Length: 186
Image (cartoon, rainbow, N blue to C red; front, side, top):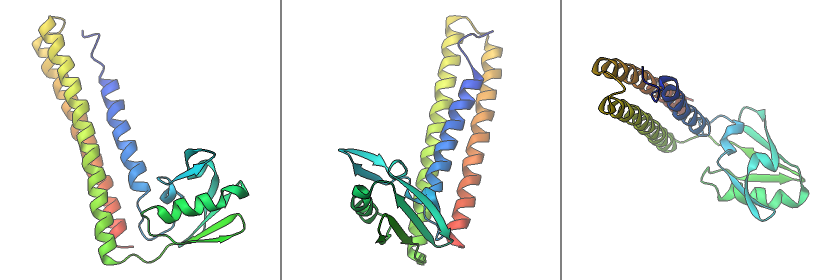
């Protein structure tokens, strides 16, 4: 049998694309407070760009409020500036080392924009999954060409790669539908 072909590796790589999509969708604003909302924000801290969760603790004390507890008092203004400069549309209110962020109601236009961003993330995940499928099929063709795999084995393995691809793309579609419903009906 083929020693260079690993269906498990292909499935793991497809799962990686799904995990990245879940993370990206988790950081989209839906009108409810979520600590993941601030994940994409980078803070200029100590001469380097750092994720906000490395300089502060983000919590959700109320459904429409985020609380950012900055660990170092000297970093409060840098965190506040990073939040203000992000395209999340949040207005930070600082009280000592705690920054409070009210999550405003989303307008219909903003909901549609968020849905478009969710579609973009889903399409990027589909493309990544298709790239993994292409890589797997290329390995199979090379193994058949080298004579280390029979045509029947190649066809059987191609079917398995396609099934894994279809399953992953179906999961992308399900994640997108769930997120879109959450965005549009909050």
